[in-house]
Amino acid sequence: MSYQEENISPIGRSLLSRRSFMKQSGFSLGALGLAQLLSSDGLLGASDPQSFTGKSPIRPSIDSDNPYATRDAHFESPAKQVLVIYCPGAVSHVDTFDYKPDLAKYHGQKPPGLPAVTFEGPTGNIAKPFWDFKPRGQSGKMVSDLVPNLGAMSDDFCFLHALNTQTSAHPQGENFLNTGFTMEGFPSFGSWVTYALGSENENLPAFVAINDPRGLARSGKNNFGSAFLPAAFQGTDFSAKQPPANLKRPASYSKQDDKTTIGLLQKLNGKHLEKYPGDANLAARIASYELAGKMQTSIPEVMDLSNEPQSIKKLYGLESGSELKKEYAKNCVLARRLIEKGVRVVQLFNGSDSSGGNGISNWDSHSNIHKTHAMQAEIMDQPTAALIKDLKSRGLLESTLIVWCTEFGRMPFLQGNGTGRDHNPDAFTCFLAGAGVKKGHSYGESDNFGFKSVEGKSSIYDFNATILHLMGLDHERLSFYHNGLERRLTNVHGHVIKEVLS
Image 1: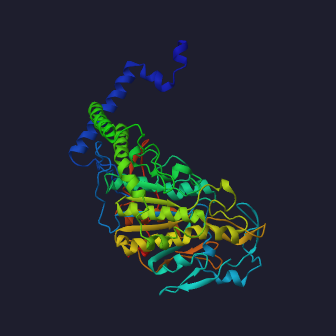
Image 2: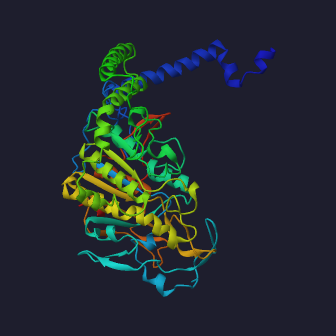
């Protein structure tokens, strides 16, 4: 045996034999023949790929020349647009929307069964809510004085009180809520929706992310990125304070020069695309450039808040409170204007990365929660309530779904420092409003302390599955084939929470 033969596996050596080769080939050809016969008799099984649920995937047909074209939903649904109001940092549910009288009853004590250590270290004693709870609206929903303006609208909201997540770390929590995975590299919720449904407006992005005046959230652009979906479906981020970059025409460049150049580029891009039909990346790049050209005229118009009446400025609080509140209020008005223009997904951020200090740049209140949560609520409460009220008064809630959310909750007991609440992934509250959602309704329940979900327990997978359902999309079928897998926003999990549907 030669040196080369010694380094070949036994199976490899068997293939060097002519007799063995002919035998293996015979078996293979026989298997191919059997497969052909079974297929012709309809006994081979379904030709379309199926998921473990038995449902075939739905991958929307994307016109490479027009990736933003409006596409049909999987089924009829009243919600045609979605506004996501996201509060990074973890809003304390036990100080806002989840009323727990036992917190006052056991204030200052440490009942048995509570952990000695949590995410950031040793735990302190049970702490009653830092703000009083009062019944609100006709439903009598108990909401704290921290968010009185949102509380006044509780008859329009559907609260989910038993949400839970897989992580107690902010970056992973943001990823999980917004992309369905704790790791980076997966498409955001808004990208999935625009991939499925396209846009209702030819002159504005299908998906806009309005960043907080203080900057990006912890996970940055991953919260509104497209990952492995075609690049056309990533969120375009700008705010009332910060317009999209590189849209303004240079002073030395006339309007006619701009128009002529755009026309030439369209011709050149079209010819180049003809050479590479079906190239999704190239088509997305061309579509993005063309959309940028249209945005040069559409964006200044939608961002010009000067023509808003004084009543709207007063409603949103554009001229009262802190500077951060005023800037966030402008973002809320911008969000309403984008919804009016038919933008499919608007993601509005209330809070940024926590690098500015504990509880200062977002809701992450590990100390001085009474001061830091109050600061965040002063920024968020009035403008957010005004935005929802304004959409309702214009009849836009009939076709728009509102999602108010945060990545997890906070503990019912204080940390060792005695002034802040630690992360709580096992129970927290978010709410829905608008198209397709029950009004003045609460679903799910946490335990007597707001520590763990005990009734109607719902995962982030369930939460996202429900939002997709309200947009007319089947979360088990909306997919994208990537690296040998049919990828979904909800991975292989999730159930629609039917109890919240109207």
